[in-house]
Amino acid sequence: MKFIINFVSYAFVLSKLTYKTNGLKNALMCARNLCENNGTCIDTNAGYSCFCSNGYIGINCEKTMNKSQPSKGQFNLYRIISTNPCKNGGRPLSPELNKIICHCKSGTTGRFCEILIDVCASNPCRSRGMCQSFINLYACSCFPGYTGSNCEIKLNLCLSDPCQNNGKCIDYSSYCACECQDGFTGPLCKNKIDECSGSPCKNATCVPLIPSGYRCETKQDYCSSNPCVHGTCKTGALGYECICSSEYAGKRCESKNSEYA
Image 1: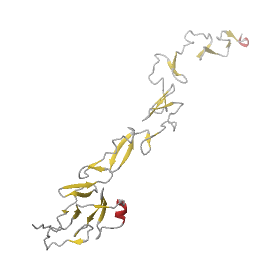
Image 2: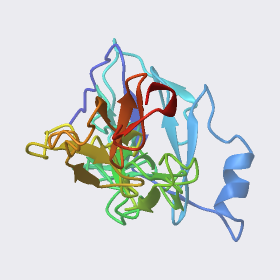
Image 3: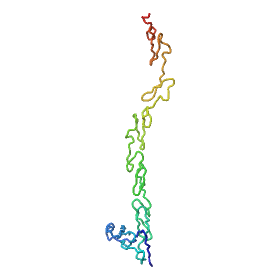
Image 4: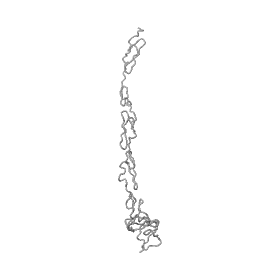
């Protein structure tokens, strides 16, 4: 019975056989460059195997494939794969002729290395940011108030003292807020409250108080009783004042000047 192996334009020729190291470590075997014609040496549990480049076969990739001549059975220990079935940079291994096994890069798994290992599953961002998983690495996008590669650093949001007019800054981890003193308002306590803006006093004058509040002042008409006998009455803050005519004097202009007597 003859075994015909078709020559393909791009192929991995994988040896089923492994070779004992005779007591030497696998790494030392591959360090000797046993695979010829640009073949790649792969460590195995029992020794090493060679991945041959396109057009070569053999234990150490020492034989050239001849597509014009059918084999006589000497190639039946080898398997030809026209395309690499392994994903994400994995390398194909074939310890059995009827089964493909992939050697996966770190960060991937699955029969064909098609599954990316979720490096965010361990919560490296500490629930303080969004974790984005890549092959064998991750990146944290931190929430407000946190920084660092793993969002492990808590920011002091009140460090810049944002509250004005002696307002008190309160840090709530992801944001800060200002507690304003009496008489001030606004997100940063920079607005002075106008206590009289709503005209709270009826038939009286509104007077703002410091630091907050107001009082209503009623202005009394001290002249309504006509206290000035021979003069003009003028209302003041605490009472009235009489402006006397030239012939009279006294608090109420009630006395006639002597020179006019």
